[in-house]
Length: 309
Image (cartoon, rainbow, N blue to C red; front, side, top):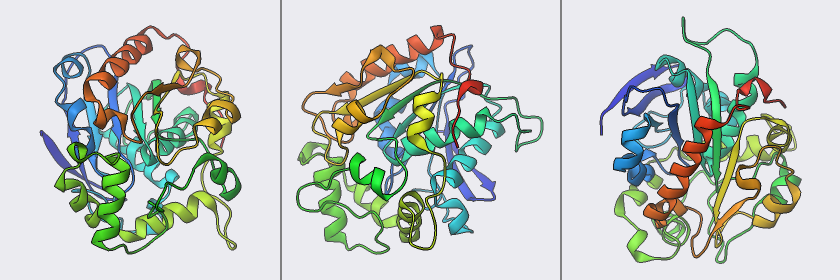
């Protein structure tokens, strides 16, 4: 993949940029915890998506080919990651973008909306103002704080979770990936997934969890994500596998009052789990392409309208 390294205050970041030149918004892909941009291989290699949209993705600090964060408390939280991603977009001089966030990546994308809505000078000199034309959330229930997150997430059978654990053995990682990301289907499991999980900075899982839920000594960090998606004029597509092992889909459907929901409903893809874009690449690609087409026509998607902190 055509990629490069960028030195930032959050560490040395591995970035992929297809660098397509056209008038369409760029498509930014944000991966989940204990994963990397490799998870988006099918989208990156899609001839249809590649010909129509500039694709940008990166390995978050503490993940994949990027370095660990030099300041873990600042970087390993939704706001820290959002700051890093905005810096990358500004470095690439991207003016309009559609965000697609999976799991942790979706929380980062939501966090970006109020950051970009503020009329602050760019963090990168002479960078253009970024307009968000759309947001697709996959496996991401907007939430902040222990009580709300207890509603938004569910504990999968067998306790398939590692969030908040600094160290986890190969058996635990393998179990999580085979029954989580790969949805219990051998054909969806690849060895690099385990290597990505083992490579993840264990401090990242601890600080991300603590920042999102809060601790006895510190309130949750970041924006009120539920409030943001209930107030923003950015067009939002919510696409989940009906069999998602981690997300309470009832919470997404009933508790979140989306302001600008694509197609007027949260989409559930039958027979798929937490990573539907990986389990059914062809089927998901059709949904993504339709959303990207609609984002081009959407007139109310300037992120100046995004609110909530």
